[in-house]
Amino acid sequence: MLESLSYTFMQNALISGVLIGIISGIIGSLIVVNKMVFLSGGIAHSAYGGIGIAIFFGLPILLCTSIFSIFITIIIAILSYKQRGNLDVIIGLTWALGMSFGILLVDLTPGYNTDLMSYLFGSLLAVSNDDIIFMITLLVFVLLTISVLYRDILSVSYDSEYATLRGVKSRLIYTLILILSSLTIVISIKIVGLILVIALLTIPIYIAQKFANSLFSMMLISIFLSLSFIIIGLYISYTYDLSSGPSIILVGSIVLFFVFIYKSLTKK
Image 1 (tube, rainbow, N blue to C red):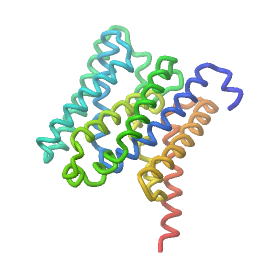
Image 2: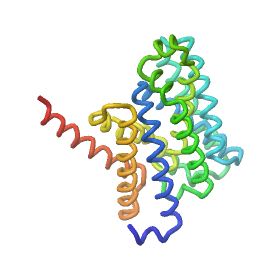
Image 3: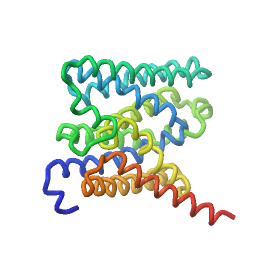
């Protein structure tokens, strides 16, 4: 592993893995606590529309996908306020439309097919210096937001109606959580890929839930687990020349399996 760090792409992969591990541990906890897993799946797959636009018009992929995802997220948030009963339909529609739109644009891009798989399953080679700068910026933004609004986020996550009665702007906080989730999903696609990004945002948190007694402790345990899964997965990916995304998720899934067994055996 130490020998592999002499390569720039491996350095970028490890740095981005650490950044994503911290961000996904924090945002993943909010996604699970707010029961947004399915909604996040819709955002993740609709993000492919942003990838398609970037590829078709030759724009910066990370920036273009982030803007597109925020746009889709705001639409979902507004529609879910007004038609909460049809939330599943709205998510399914944006999921299908975004992904179909992106795939068609990629198909229409002359001569393009080289990096497509890296966005589906993640790739060590896909991370650039610009991506790392974007990740650092997002991490700083996430940490500042959580630090300043922690009490409001906590109250909205566990009881939004009571939070509203106390004067908390629940809709604004809810939309902010969704936007942070969409940005986290976009940058995580670089490492684990579009198909597996939700697994990274849920597996460490499901495990952390079984040992944490507060949202803060859940975030800390999730960060530790995410970092462990990513580093071990990257090592396996590099050593055996495998895709980084499936390697990371497989490590997390195996740990989750043994945690389930341990909890079943120790349950009274």
